[in-house]
Structures are given as structure tokens and as C-alpha cells.
Length: 166
Image (tube, rainbow, N blue to C red; front, side, top):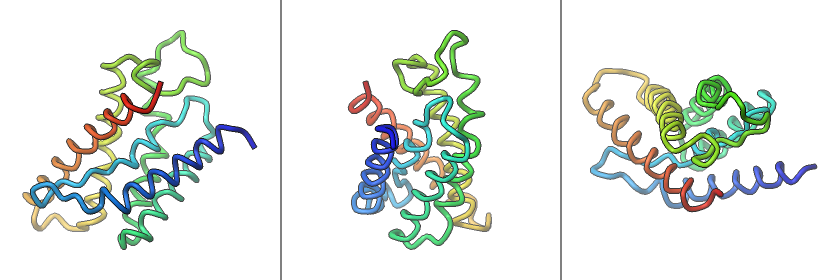
């Protein structure tokens, strides 16, 4: 077992607890809910095994689904993001970077990291709320929910990035 596994397991527990106990109870203007656990999927290093990313993302999504009473919504959307994460990260990586590059503002640069987070969060929020609604009958409310949650999630991920990563 490596220290990376234990750091990842600790982050797993912290993201799950923060989301379930605190952030799930925030509904700004009745639409926007921050989905901070997306940062867990965004933060996998460059050469992390793809199967490992899928397993971690699915398990985190499953835990959040169990405690949030959203059967399969979070696990499906987070697994999709875990599947796409290595391919979404590739265009933002500098050519002369190391194989074990950890995506952050310091390694990618501020602008590239923000674009990377925006792309990941857009994909996640679209998948999450499409699975949750499973219908586009009330598409105005769906767009408000996706847009509000997208903005809150990006802000929270960037705040966590600035406060806790070096």
C-alpha cells in the first residue's frame, strides 16, 4: 500500500462526509447545490490507472447515493466523469511535464486549470441532472439547476484548490 492510496482514501471519506452532512443541505435560491466531490475525480494524477479512477469514482458516487437517497444518479454521473477524466486532462497538460503530473493551479497554470475544471464540471452537472430529472418536461427549471450548481461547484472546487493544495 502506498501513501497515495491512503491520501485518496482519506479524501474519499472527507468528500463524502462534507457532501452528505453539509453541502446537500444547501439549495441556493432553490436551484443550486454545490457538488464538491467532483474535485475528487478532477484531481487524479496523469498516469493513474484508468480502472482505478473508475473504481474510486464509482465507489464515491455509490456512497453519496446511499446517504443522499439518489439511487444511481451520483454513481452513474461520477463514473462517466472518471471515464472521461484522463482524456479531458490530456489537452491541458504541458508537453514537458512529468508522467505523474497532479492537476492543480501550480502544475497546469491558473487559466488552464480553470478551463479544465469548467469542462469537467459541465460534463458532470449535465449528466447528473439529466439522470436525476430523466425528463426534459420542465427544461427551464432543469437549466437553472444545472447552471446554478455548475457555478457553485466551480467556485467551491477553486476555493478548495487554493486553500488545501500546494
